Length: 107
Image 1 (cartoon, rainbow, N blue to C red):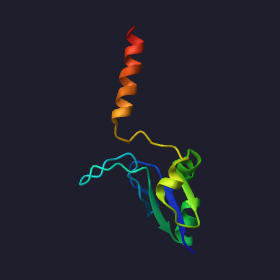
Image 2 (tube, rainbow, N blue to C red):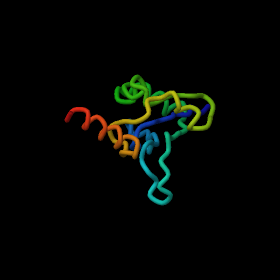
Image 3 (tube, helix red, strand yellow):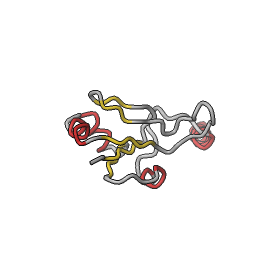
C-alpha cells in the first residue's frame, strides 16, 4: 500500500535515501509558476525508514510534512500546513510586508 507524503518545504529532501519532493514557494524555471507544495508516493518500507528519521520527524512536527493514505490535490492538503520555510523565495507580498515593517522601525 502506498502512502502519500505532502511537503511544503522549498527543496527536495533526502531522508536516508528516501527522496521527498519539495519546491514549495519556488518559481518553476520554465513557467514561473510557484506551487504551494509537492506530493511523493512512498512504499511501506520507505515509510518505515522515514518514521525512524529524526529530521523527517522534525519536519512533520513543525508542519512542513503531512502523510495521507490517499492521493489528493496538493493545494487542498497543503492549505492548512506551514506555508514556507527559510528557503522560499520572496514574493511581492512578502517584500511589501518587509518594507512596511522597516518603515515602521524608522519612524
